[in-house]
Length: 437
Image (cartoon, rainbow, N blue to C red; front, top):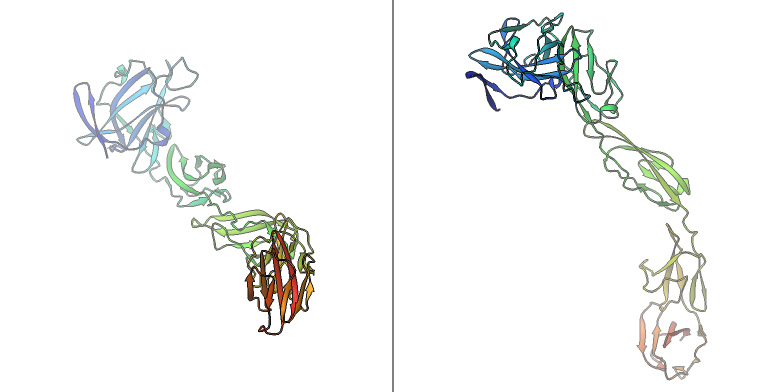
């Protein structure tokens, strides 16, 4: 708390603790002014250093305000009253021959009091511009201005907070009843939080010339955007919906127990509604438009001469092994396995994908699957009629590689009976043979 001191001429008067200017006492200083001296009382009792006094012109414009200065129990007035600047189009204060009016803000009761009383408002004449010096009619520090408060029992206790999206609230908290409420967002004694926006909003209650104030805290509902907002595919189901504020309830087409089932609604656009209450007890209703796209049809895998092919044309392909792990460099619609086993293909369009059923790839007889070479078996030996091949692999039914080298003759005399896959590589060419031993 800061303290300041009042000096009138060479006379030291006292000090005042600085407090916030009352909301009705805001004014615009000009280069025209005169000072009013005196003493301030309410019902015969000197004011406190927290009280304020102000002058108003006949249009209700505040022309100057100052805090009461208390010394030795006496409340002094040192009020600079500003004149209207004729060079502007704004009414800042008093003009020549215009009366002014005094109003006191009684801090302890939080009320404004007109002089001399709310029922008998007294005008003052004789304002002159003396460049801030004491005006001839108001230069006596001993003159007492006794404000009569006939409504010391005026109260306003709102004790409410609202959310910005709440409906207008009826203001009926002021006593005695029958007064007028005013302030930002107030219309016909209703307060509308959607007009004011968030923050503390000052409400004034006036009756019989006395006014009191209280505030309403308006909360802004927090954002609760849908995090799992898609896009979705029509082959998905049971998607857990998550928003920025948890604990609410989702509703809309395809919503069951706060999960979204695109496979039930099919392709299209759908509204997902979310109702939740935030930490300030504000009700949030978020509506999110989501899109469900067509997924590819379930692809079928066919085999021709050792080459697997997807039945569905897509934007992208990935072939998968028995463990559903992607196989490197398998991004076309066809794939040549090098190992006996189970395979899948995943087909993608712009937004979605679909996976095939399992396809079991195996060999059952000696059969040249790609006629780049002549292969035959004689004398327990596999013969390949090319001496310039790069690599030969012989793979059993379990996917184990038995032979992996550059060779064109393979001794199979000690091999177990069964089905094998013979894979031959030369330059960029690959050939596969089913071998039955």
